[in-house]
Length: 460
View 1: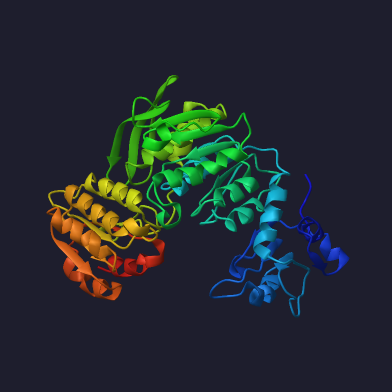
View 2: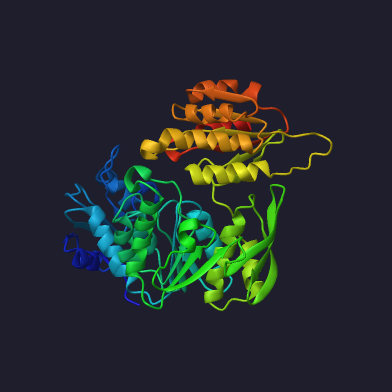
């Protein structure tokens, strides 16, 4: 296949190539926007952010082995070639779009309001049983991260699983034009980014922009338990998955085996087979069904799919289990919206932990959910009421908007409620609030930085 070089990047972007001719022919084998991630052969994309300017780190990128930099201004003392463009963000999208067209392999785009990363990881785990599969790393699911992911593809790869996240109208069109997926997996339509998308129908409209960039023989794999997705017509072949009997692929006998695994039977017109996922959370069954649907598109056997599911590993911050010896922590503080929080609370309520005769309590520490628009207060109250209905032993809320979760929990008669305005106050109180043997869920929007609470919990 054709390789990417600094000179070709200049040609594709219309940018100015600055450097020696010999260096211009060096192969670019990846792309990053953080100089700490640079590996030899990488393209370093200089992005000017709110707190730092990537141009200031170009020298360290070259020192780490960067093959080239993409920049908006002159790089003083550059020790390697660079391409100067008007906008590095627009330029890297152009490069990503160009590079993706060099690959004649199946691309699977994964989107939805909740569970994108889990579904992406599980799909990649299944496909890897048969194909050399590339996948989105870290949180590279946006207009910058997706091109970075694509530029790590090489001629060894036989499939690519790309996570596609959005927060506004038009964004899905822009990233779909880059990815051009052959298969779209849509996990659900939930209450996320409502400041921009207004309501659930707005979320569906924004997500479904993807179908305008798929071929007529493309496949849409959709959560048929979702009220909006069940009846949605994507204009291409549609396969549904879920727990309901109306789905093409469904799960039965879903059992969360403590915090270690989930067992289930996967059922379709072609029969049934048992499967096991070595991670926490009954909700993982839905991702397993999505992965099964994708695997079936590639002619994978039940045995291959089952092995792939068994090889799944959860991503840090997403229902990660931490056993401290004193308590069980369910670290799910990567992000949060009403749909994901209620799912996590339900899973916590169903959790069974064997501790001999010693009882254990189910405790949730919840923070603010960002970006819910003018319905934010009520949505926080609804989450609190749901937590009460789950029968938790205690709910601890932290943050200004989380006061509404606390309010909803109390109004619905929840057990042992606590509220703290500041994380520092909560951390100081943890030794009094958490008891030995507790199972503790911790969840909030990423910007709230609930990760700062984890060390204190682990030390209890």
